[in-house]
Length: 239
Ligand SMILES: O=C(O)CCC(=O)C(=O)O
View (cartoon, rainbow, N blue to C red):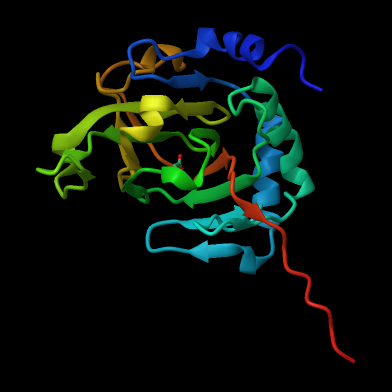
C-alpha cells in the first residue's frame, strides 16, 4: 500500500516540476538505477520475436493489451515490468488508478516518432522511463483550423514550442495542458544540439548550450492507464 493520500504523494513531486514549462511536466533524473536499467533492457530483448511490431522508423512492443476505442482486451503485465509500474503507481500521478499498459519503443540512432497527441484512449497522464541513450522530445503547437479545431501541419519546425532532454534512467511525467494541447514527437536525427528550447537543461547533468549529443539506441517504456478494458473472451473447445 502506498504511504499517504494521493495528494500528499503528488505534493512530494513538486521539486521535479519543470517551472518554465506548461502545466504539467515532471522530470525525475535517475528514477531507476543502472542495474534496473540493464535488467529492463535485458527483458525487452528477451521478449519473444512476435512481440515486436516493426514500423518504418522504430519498433515497439505492447504489454497489457492493445488500446482500442472499443476497449482494450486486458492482459496481465509481465512480472519484469511490475516493480517499475508499481513505483510509478505509488507516485499518485494516476490518482487511484493503476497503470495497466506499457508501450516499449526502440529507436535506433536516426529514428524518431511523428508529432502526435495520445488522445482519449488513455487516462490523461503519460509516464516514460528512458533506457539506453538520451532522447529529445519536442512539443509542438497544433495548427488552429478556421473552425477552431486543431490539426497537423507539415512544417513542424515552425510549430516547435519547446523540447525536453530525456536522459537514460529518468522518468518523465506529462499531464494537463501538456497532455492535451501540445503534440509530442522525436526528430529522426543521429545527434541532438542542446539549445535554449530545451527547458530542463538545468536538471540534466553537465550540459552546456551548443553541446552536441550523439544518439545511440534508446528504449522508452511509456506507462499509462487505459480506462476502458474488457476481459478476454473464453473460447471453449468443442468435442
Ligand atoms: O519514446 C517516447 O518517449 C515517446 C513515445 C510516444 O510518444 C508514443 O509512443 O506515443
